[in-house]
Length: 254
Image (cartoon, rainbow, N blue to C red; front, side, top):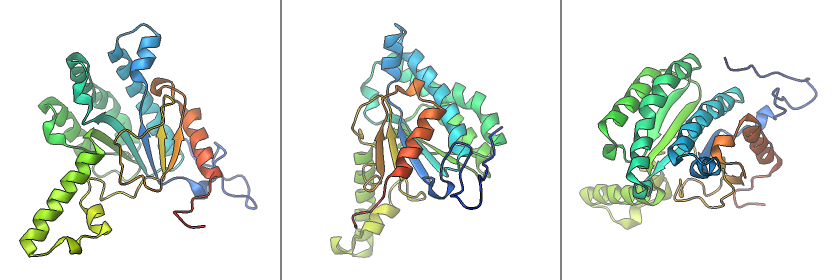
């Protein structure tokens, strides 16, 4: 059961039991879950063991995110470039949602979490699609945290797809490129139903965004955490939120 948030006293900012300012919780947190392979290698285990352990971290972080009042949590699960990995690793990753969602779904339902996805889903195996469809259907009426898995997702491909769709629509209406607006592009992205991320976290110490939400993170705060994803935990996420809360977001202003 998720823990309740508490108020310390009426003369101070409202805080959670984690010491966070509840008036400054990022609405949308996006995470590049990096380091599964290295975690396994350090332990002389197959890479797939790292992916398995990484999914256990997903469960933990989802709970914490819901506890502290984050409304959207987007996890970079599989990129359009990841198909180049060894076949056995790709097959294992594609099968992860089948077993993972089967065991995690009751908990998601109990805690009012809604499962959603972004990405080019039509290229995924049928068993993977079936597991994802069931999770979406069973949680569609939940009103709490939106847990968004980016699967077979790539930022460049997303923007390209958006531009192609806009071109077709403009052509059909007899319009020109002069009619294209930033809002029009926003409206044709896979994330059009979500606010842009306030905070982007990448684990494993790598400092790049790897084609993840490249349009949407224009004004996001970036935090690069040294822990490998399977080792990332509640304390790690809370510390990232505290760093976020210590910053002043200017959005290009003063």
